[in-house]
Length: 116
Length: 113
Image 1 (cartoon, rainbow over the protein chains, first blue to last red):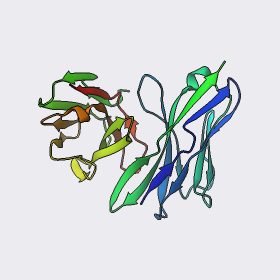
Image 2 (spheres, rainbow over the protein chains, first blue to last red):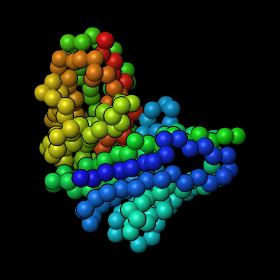
Image 3 (cartoon, each protein chain N blue to C red):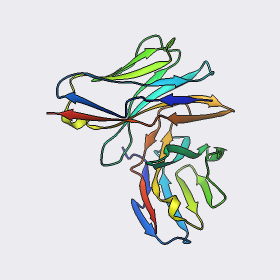
Protein backbone atom coordinates (compact mmCIF):
# COMPACT_ATOMS: atom_id res chain seq x y z
CA UNK A 1 0.00 0.00 0.00
CA UNK A 2 1.08 3.56 -0.66
CA UNK A 3 2.10 5.53 2.39
CA UNK A 4 3.51 8.97 3.19
CA UNK A 5 5.20 9.68 6.51
CA UNK A 6 5.94 13.12 7.88
CA UNK A 7 7.68 12.63 11.20
CA UNK A 8 7.80 16.28 12.31
CA UNK A 9 4.46 17.46 13.71
CA UNK A 10 5.94 20.93 14.20
CA UNK A 11 9.05 22.85 13.19
CA UNK A 12 10.41 26.26 14.14
CA UNK A 13 12.82 28.38 12.13
CA UNK A 14 14.20 31.89 12.38
CA UNK A 15 13.30 34.32 9.66
CA UNK A 16 15.82 34.31 6.78
CA UNK A 17 17.17 30.88 7.68
CA UNK A 18 16.65 27.70 5.67
CA UNK A 19 14.50 24.83 6.91
CA UNK A 20 14.03 21.22 5.80
CA UNK A 21 10.71 19.43 6.17
CA UNK A 22 10.98 15.65 6.08
CA UNK A 23 8.92 13.27 4.00
CA UNK A 24 9.39 9.56 3.41
CA UNK A 25 7.22 7.42 1.21
CA UNK A 26 6.51 3.80 0.50
CA UNK A 27 5.34 2.37 -2.78
CA UNK A 28 6.04 -0.61 -5.00
CA UNK A 29 5.03 1.28 -8.12
CA UNK A 30 8.14 2.24 -10.19
CA UNK A 31 6.34 5.28 -11.58
CA UNK A 32 5.13 7.82 -9.07
CA UNK A 33 5.05 11.51 -8.33
CA UNK A 34 5.72 13.48 -5.18
CA UNK A 35 4.07 16.78 -4.32
CA UNK A 36 4.27 19.38 -1.60
CA UNK A 37 1.36 21.59 -0.61
CA UNK A 38 1.15 24.53 1.77
CA UNK A 39 -1.95 25.21 3.87
CA UNK A 40 -1.93 28.60 5.65
CA UNK A 41 -4.23 29.31 8.57
CA UNK A 42 -6.78 30.67 6.10
CA UNK A 43 -7.30 27.07 4.97
CA UNK A 44 -6.58 26.95 1.26
CA UNK A 45 -4.26 24.30 -0.20
CA UNK A 46 -1.49 25.74 -2.33
CA UNK A 47 0.59 23.58 -4.67
CA UNK A 48 4.32 24.24 -4.22
CA UNK A 49 6.48 21.72 -6.06
CA UNK A 50 6.47 18.40 -7.91
CA UNK A 51 9.05 15.63 -8.41
CA UNK A 52 8.58 12.69 -10.74
CA UNK A 53 10.16 9.36 -9.91
CA UNK A 54 12.15 9.35 -13.15
CA UNK A 55 13.31 12.94 -12.94
CA UNK A 56 17.09 13.07 -12.91
CA UNK A 57 17.38 16.40 -11.15
CA UNK A 58 15.85 17.68 -7.95
CA UNK A 59 12.91 19.98 -8.52
CA UNK A 60 13.20 23.67 -7.64
CA UNK A 61 10.61 26.46 -7.60
CA UNK A 62 11.92 29.78 -6.35
CA UNK A 63 12.76 29.40 -2.66
CA UNK A 64 11.47 25.83 -2.62
CA UNK A 65 13.54 22.82 -3.55
CA UNK A 66 12.93 19.15 -3.19
CA UNK A 67 15.75 16.94 -1.91
CA UNK A 68 14.82 13.69 -3.66
CA UNK A 69 16.71 10.61 -2.50
CA UNK A 70 15.16 7.69 -4.32
CA UNK A 71 17.14 4.93 -2.64
CA UNK A 72 16.09 6.24 0.76
CA UNK A 73 12.54 6.91 -0.43
CA UNK A 74 12.66 10.43 0.86
CA UNK A 75 11.45 13.69 -0.65
CA UNK A 76 12.29 16.46 1.77
CA UNK A 77 11.19 20.03 1.13
CA UNK A 78 13.81 22.72 1.62
CA UNK A 79 12.66 26.31 2.07
CA UNK A 80 15.48 28.82 1.78
CA UNK A 81 15.48 32.30 3.32
CA UNK A 82 12.33 31.71 5.39
CA UNK A 83 9.76 34.47 5.56
CA UNK A 84 7.04 35.11 8.15
CA UNK A 85 4.47 34.26 5.49
CA UNK A 86 5.89 30.75 5.25
CA UNK A 87 4.26 29.89 8.58
CA UNK A 88 1.71 27.23 7.64
CA UNK A 89 0.99 23.51 7.52
CA UNK A 90 2.97 21.66 4.86
CA UNK A 91 1.75 18.42 3.35
CA UNK A 92 3.74 15.89 1.38
CA UNK A 93 1.74 13.77 -1.05
CA UNK A 94 2.40 10.92 -3.44
CA UNK A 95 0.64 9.93 -6.60
CA UNK A 96 0.96 6.29 -7.43
CA UNK A 97 -1.08 3.81 -9.37
CA UNK A 98 -3.08 1.79 -6.91
CA UNK A 99 -5.34 -0.78 -8.50
CA UNK A 100 -5.72 1.34 -11.62
CA UNK A 101 -6.45 4.46 -9.62
CA UNK A 102 -4.00 7.37 -9.81
CA UNK A 103 -4.82 9.14 -6.59
CA UNK A 104 -2.87 11.28 -4.17
CA UNK A 105 -2.06 10.00 -0.71
CA UNK A 106 -1.24 12.72 1.81
CA UNK A 107 0.93 12.73 4.89
CA UNK A 108 -0.29 14.09 8.23
CA UNK A 109 1.52 17.37 7.69
CA UNK A 110 4.14 19.49 9.45
CA UNK A 111 3.30 22.80 11.05
CA UNK A 112 6.04 25.32 10.33
CA UNK A 113 6.40 28.44 12.43
CA UNK A 114 8.76 31.17 11.27
CA UNK A 115 9.96 33.38 14.12
CA UNK A 116 10.95 37.02 13.57
CA UNK B 1 -7.24 32.98 -14.31
CA UNK B 2 -10.06 31.59 -12.24
CA UNK B 3 -9.10 28.77 -9.94
CA UNK B 4 -11.30 25.98 -8.64
CA UNK B 5 -14.51 27.51 -7.31
CA UNK B 6 -16.41 25.90 -4.49
CA UNK B 7 -19.70 26.86 -2.93
CA UNK B 8 -20.82 27.45 -0.32
CA UNK B 9 -17.76 28.49 1.69
CA UNK B 10 -19.54 27.68 4.94
CA UNK B 11 -22.56 25.52 5.67
CA UNK B 12 -24.24 24.96 9.00
CA UNK B 13 -27.22 22.65 9.12
CA UNK B 14 -29.03 20.25 11.39
CA UNK B 15 -28.48 16.54 11.28
CA UNK B 16 -30.77 14.70 8.93
CA UNK B 17 -30.79 17.49 6.38
CA UNK B 18 -29.51 17.08 2.84
CA UNK B 19 -26.29 18.92 2.07
CA UNK B 20 -25.07 19.71 -1.44
CA UNK B 21 -21.56 20.99 -2.09
CA UNK B 22 -20.68 22.40 -5.47
CA UNK B 23 -17.48 22.67 -7.46
CA UNK B 24 -16.43 24.30 -10.71
CA UNK B 25 -13.02 23.01 -11.86
CA UNK B 26 -10.45 25.00 -13.77
CA UNK B 27 -11.41 25.19 -17.41
CA UNK B 28 -9.60 22.54 -19.46
CA UNK B 29 -8.85 20.31 -16.51
CA UNK B 30 -9.96 16.74 -17.11
CA UNK B 31 -9.65 15.33 -13.60
CA UNK B 32 -11.67 16.37 -10.56
CA UNK B 33 -11.20 15.24 -6.98
CA UNK B 34 -13.25 15.54 -3.79
CA UNK B 35 -11.40 15.45 -0.45
CA UNK B 36 -12.44 15.66 3.18
CA UNK B 37 -10.15 17.12 5.85
CA UNK B 38 -10.55 16.53 9.58
CA UNK B 39 -8.18 16.86 12.49
CA UNK B 40 -8.42 13.16 13.26
CA UNK B 41 -8.05 11.69 9.77
CA UNK B 42 -6.24 14.40 7.84
CA UNK B 43 -6.90 14.73 4.11
CA UNK B 44 -8.83 11.86 2.59
CA UNK B 45 -9.74 11.37 -1.04
CA UNK B 46 -13.44 10.65 -1.36
CA UNK B 47 -13.84 10.25 -5.11
CA UNK B 48 -12.26 11.34 -8.36
CA UNK B 49 -13.44 11.74 -11.92
CA UNK B 50 -11.61 11.60 -15.24
CA UNK B 51 -13.46 13.19 -18.16
CA UNK B 52 -16.62 13.30 -16.05
CA UNK B 53 -16.49 9.56 -15.30
CA UNK B 54 -16.03 8.37 -11.71
CA UNK B 55 -12.79 6.40 -11.53
CA UNK B 56 -12.29 5.70 -7.85
CA UNK B 57 -14.98 6.11 -5.21
CA UNK B 58 -13.40 3.80 -2.66
CA UNK B 59 -13.03 6.70 -0.25
CA UNK B 60 -16.73 7.51 -0.11
CA UNK B 61 -17.64 6.75 3.51
CA UNK B 62 -21.04 5.22 2.98
CA UNK B 63 -24.21 5.30 0.93
CA UNK B 64 -25.20 8.62 2.41
CA UNK B 65 -22.52 10.21 0.22
CA UNK B 66 -22.91 10.59 -3.52
CA UNK B 67 -21.07 12.60 -6.16
CA UNK B 68 -21.91 13.54 -9.70
CA UNK B 69 -20.19 15.29 -12.56
CA UNK B 70 -22.82 15.99 -15.20
CA UNK B 71 -20.42 18.00 -17.37
CA UNK B 72 -16.81 19.15 -17.53
CA UNK B 73 -17.45 22.34 -15.61
CA UNK B 74 -19.53 21.22 -12.65
CA UNK B 75 -19.60 18.63 -9.90
CA UNK B 76 -21.63 18.07 -6.76
CA UNK B 77 -21.05 16.15 -3.56
CA UNK B 78 -24.24 15.31 -1.72
CA UNK B 79 -24.76 14.01 1.80
CA UNK B 80 -28.20 12.68 2.64
CA UNK B 81 -29.01 12.41 5.48
CA UNK B 82 -26.23 14.37 7.14
CA UNK B 83 -24.79 13.43 10.53
CA UNK B 84 -22.61 15.37 13.02
CA UNK B 85 -19.60 13.18 12.18
CA UNK B 86 -19.72 14.53 8.63
CA UNK B 87 -18.53 17.90 9.95
CA UNK B 88 -15.28 18.68 8.14
CA UNK B 89 -13.73 20.84 5.46
CA UNK B 90 -14.51 19.49 2.01
CA UNK B 91 -12.13 20.35 -0.80
CA UNK B 92 -12.55 20.06 -4.51
CA UNK B 93 -9.44 19.93 -6.70
CA UNK B 94 -8.81 19.66 -10.40
CA UNK B 95 -5.85 18.81 -12.62
CA UNK B 96 -5.07 18.61 -16.31
CA UNK B 97 -4.89 14.85 -15.95
CA UNK B 98 -4.76 12.46 -13.03
CA UNK B 99 -0.94 12.51 -12.88
CA UNK B 100 -0.57 16.31 -12.93
CA UNK B 101 -0.50 18.64 -9.90
CA UNK B 102 -3.90 19.20 -8.39
CA UNK B 103 -5.18 22.69 -7.77
CA UNK B 104 -7.52 23.06 -4.83
CA UNK B 105 -10.53 25.24 -4.21
CA UNK B 106 -10.87 27.19 -0.99
CA UNK B 107 -12.98 24.45 0.57
CA UNK B 108 -16.40 24.25 2.18
CA UNK B 109 -16.45 24.24 5.96
CA UNK B 110 -19.40 22.03 6.90
CA UNK B 111 -20.87 21.87 10.38
CA UNK B 112 -23.66 19.43 11.14
CA UNK B 113 -25.41 20.19 14.42
